[in-house]
Amino acid sequence: MLQRIKWPLFLIAGLMFGLKTYIVYRFVFTISLENMMQEIILFINPFATALVFFSLAVLMKPETQKKFIKYGALIGTLVIYVNLAYYRNFTDFITLPSLFQFKNFSDLGSSAASLTQLGDLLLFLDVVILFYLAKKTDNRLVKTYQRKGKLKILALSFSLLLTNVVLAEIERPMLFLRGFDREYLVKNIGLFNYHIYDIVINSKTKVQRVLADGSELVEIEEYVNENIEQDTKSDMWGIAKDKNIIYISLESVQSFVINETLNGEEITPFLNDLIEDSYYFENFYHQTNLGKTSDSEFLVETGLYPLPNSSVFFTHGQNEYNAVPEIIKENGYYSAVFHANNKSFWNRDVAYESLGFDQFFAEEYYNVTEENSIGWGLNDKEFFEQSIKYMEELPKPFYTKFITLTNHHPFELDEQFASIDQFDSNSNTVNQYFPTVRYTDEAVKQFFDLLKQSGLYEESIIVLYGDHYGISEYHNEAMGQFLGKELTPYDSLQLQRVPLIIHIPGHEDDRVIDKISAQIDMKPTLLNMLGIENNNDLTFGTDLFAEDRKPFISFRNGDFVTNDYLFTKGTCYDRQTGEPVDDVSDDSEETTEESLCAPYKQSVLDELGHSDDLIYGDLLRFYDFSKGTTKEE
Ligand code: GP9
Ligand code: MN
Image (cartoon, rainbow, N blue to C red):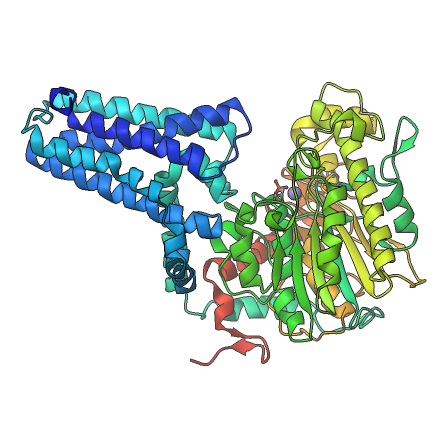
């Protein structure tokens, strides 16, 4: 039968290889598909990629075509096969750096037998057929193509791939900038394009790293010494010494819901009560960028800014950092993160290791079913409930972080789980936000009860913070309706405030603090509360309880807030009134805007630039934190 085939060899190869890859994606890797669009992309991608690759053969002479197609299919299949073996062991896809981690591959080697399944041989079926066809059909299936023919074939196959990329970008906007998750990448652009993407990103990072030699540190050190106060001690110094630390990252919770009602119902009754008995920072801003939750984690653990054009966990997750888990390990702390999502989301599994976390309780530690899931995965109530048993077993004192998930865009919550009404506006996102925020509030309340029951509560300090906004500026009209005013850029920046609540059981002197503060300050604040000296750090935050603090909060795009002013979208606002600072009176040449906001502009840009330089060059590897100097060669 094979003898009768007349189609060009590159087309046969492309179709067979495409079909095979589709079957592997769909039925062998456990890739989750959430909607029809994802199904379509997953179907188009293998064929598009295979056809683009094999159609390159038309540029070659017939004999070379055969070799290219045969060996191309063989190598491609080996790539799939190695990924499959790796996936069976790690439920993840290979990354360039992981190829150089021999630990991973020796693990693989030792379990090679169990990883190889008889069915795997079927993977090579099309390769065998191609070898056969190339040999037995003489040159019937290959020919020399004319210029026009070549162009037509290549244009067709590339446009198929372009369709794939466009659909992927629609399904996951900014996929290429943000990376998100290896599973997302594979399901949207396929395994092979993912490998190319990974190689490009990692090579760029490697080059920047190789070119850096540590001499850049001098200027950064100078900046930090001059501008970031590190060694004064507030009256909170050592208050958390040897206590367990429990961080709760509140997904998408913004400050505007705190102490606020909807149709007469409190939105966050538990958090409102908790604030009465805690330190509450009401002017605390998130500073995240493309990496969303992971950016907030990066800020909190390292005291550095996330990157301007990528998710730093994804592109620089393997750098050396002097992160909180590493520092407190030296003081006897054990660190763990709890988050019931795919462990490779935001490259967390890799980044956490660099940050020095001892344990990551990701999705595989939880019993996740359709019934106990909402939106993105395990609901927050179940999440805390299932976490407590792991928590009780942790060595003490511990430093833990719980990342909630239910209040995630698009804030979908079945009515049976909703305790308060939706808002009523033309934006579903805004409308649905309130019941999901309330759900998380209830989950946190239950968590506190569990902590009390287990006896962990009294010996712990609990820090709750919002990771980033949940409602983007796109919904300003509906937000304006809720807040009862038309929103200006000033209001949009003020909406970037997220709650920060520091709860110290048994501690009396609790209050609402209105000074400007941000996620970058959390590292020095915690270390000071723990009574850990960290005076030589190269970070940009200052202790929130210290009197002498840097006079501005920077955002990733160069906007900033000072005690008196707020600068956004090129306009300087009075922070108290929200009014733009007017151009001055007639007799002065200078505008007040220039005289009032301008002095901070350069400092903000300098600070962001220094932080970026530290990350791009992986400069902290050259720094000796015990001495506060560059390491000797
Ligand atoms: C995913 C969770 C949510 O694991 O952290 O991510 P986000 O989109 O908020 O960054
Ligand atoms: Mn988040």
